[in-house]
Amino acid sequence: MMTQNQARPAYRIERVLVSTLLASNPSVKSALRPAGPVPRAAVECGWGRLLFAHTFADAAELIEEMRRERPGRRDIAFYLEDPHVVLSQAPNELFLDPSHTYRLRLHTFRPGLELRGFNVEAPRSREDADAVNRIYAARGMVTVDPEFYWAERDSRVLTHLIAVDPVTGAVIGSVTGVDHVRAFKDPQNGSSLWCLAVDPQAAYPGIGEALVRALAEHYRSRGRSFMDLSVLHDNQNAIALYEKLGFKRVPVFTLKTKNPINEKLFAGPAVEAGLNPYAMIIINEARRRGIGVEVLDAEANLFRLSFGGRSILCRESLSELTSAVALFRCDDKAVTRRTLAAAGLSVPDQRIAGSADDNAAFLERHGSVVVKPARGEQGQGITVDVRDAETLAWAVEKATAICSTVLLEQYVKGCDLRVLVIDNRVVAAAIRRPAEIVGTGDRTIAELIEAQSRRRAAATGGESRIPMDAETERCVRDAGYAMDSILPEGQVLAVRKTANLHTGGTLHDVTDRLHRRLIEASIEAARALDIPVVGLDLLVPDLFGPDYVIIEANERPGLANHEPQPTAERFVDLLFPYSAV
Image (cartoon, rainbow, N blue to C red; front, top):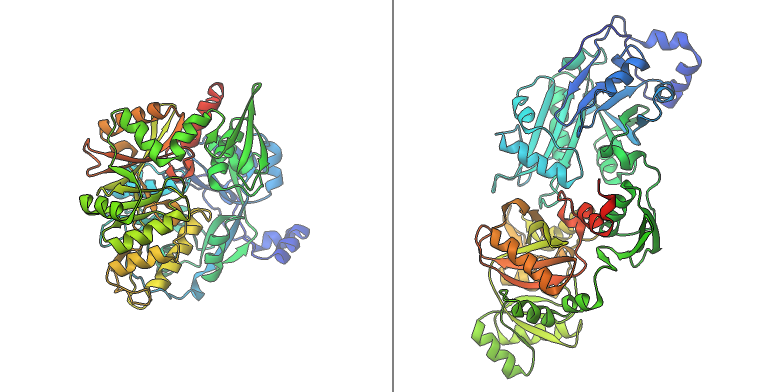
């Protein structure tokens, strides 16, 4: 876990004024260093090693250690002194991480958050490592070796904490800490925080803050003087949290290797054109492969990719490879159903809304129906589980505002499953769940919806919000509440009936758990529609069973919704097969 060697000890600076003084006066610099040697420290963290750069004898020794980074891992050299010297000796291998370092003085830290609805505790089983990795992957972080994570649960150097939903037992957040005294007998008596991650689908507020506070209290109880952390310079939400808790920025540098994992941090300026996450995930993958990117209309998320003499125009995941006929088949939901039914696939009963009597007869035949515009996207104008004539009339009127042709469809109970098919291969699948809130016992339903909507927007780059509209009010009313009701603590309430991401729904990856028949049916549907990239919406009574109905097909599915599955990679493979790496 650590290697030992004689090395010159370190000093730490916390103000730019002090930094300037030290640079201009070597005698002051020497006087501030603690006496005695500090062992060279390289702490294995499961996702890579944390190298305490100031414990290495010189730049050459640190560079040599960074070259020992294993494939698929991310080593981090922290507390880097003289970064210009290190980079001058390995400019093609190493780079300065564009992160800020923040420090919390633990003697001034005071607890101040009461946990509501979840617990913070030590890992309980090896399966918790798999759950933590799921959150890491969803956040674009390097995953941890599960065996290492579990084996090190009682480590005195590493501290792992998880946030747990007591109702489901699911892990909804994680943080790791490193005790510097245990790692290398740090004369500064410090500690540090790493890998703070919260499940983007979690409904509880304050998870990240609770994890930071718990780790700070842990190291304060050990008598540590401070807790440091490194955060990307543009992560404004995280920086706001840390500053709220009393962290202060300190001038400390971090070093990383130029590996594929870190490429987006050193490959130069990103495309700054205001495109949404669905376009950016494709653009970032294209840039990683050396494919040219030209943004043509940022407002429409329209861009051109060029490679090896081939040029393809894209609007998010809709490209020139999708024909106009295939787009038409998906755009009109009635045509979608007829095309799939003709291919022998299972679809629900459906008819075009007509007279009040005809609509009522269709409702009576099925007991519950879905009302939706024949054309539209992102769940606009859709009303699910309509059971009475009055609501039916209201739902038809609402759908008419989106499209003049309105469809009535048999309501089928089951899990809402989105399957992504690219080039006749199932690349990803996720269960979609409607937006829900969790009661705190002191806040109204409207306040909880607003708070959850802010969290969903932050987790999705502004793409997911819970509308405060008549449909949300209907769902709340059907559950026996009003918008100004106080929801009991721990009570979970679904506030939408559709599971669309854009109306606050959440997605939960199930790619590796699909029944073989669901995979086959999805591929058959893509072939029937003759479309290279499609997101299919299925309702399934049992994820592990063969039964299904296909209710819609999306010709421009959001690839960013399915991380950690390699959706952008497979899309760019389709466009430029010779760029595959």
